[in-house]
Image (cartoon, rainbow, N blue to C red; front, side, top):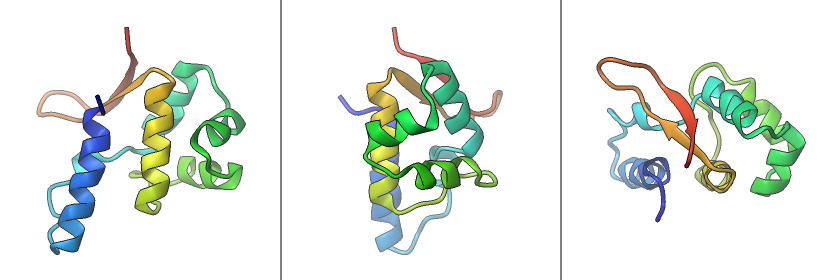
Length: 105
């Protein structure tokens, strides 16, 4: 079963092609979440690059982003899938709390 973030990226892509991305920003990963996820999973940038099939400079650029991580959809999907495989759950912001990460059981 794919996690909610994975499904959200598909939704964003669908909305992009229909010209309506407003309201979907809350479903994407931020640079702070990415750094926290990596720390929680106890993996370094090089490990995440190997796990995701992305280059080390791409991971570094994503983590250096200001706010929401930017990248092409394929790269973002690879990143989210690698974090999911590492046991990370990405938590979106809601009305009472901000974004975060946690480990699967």
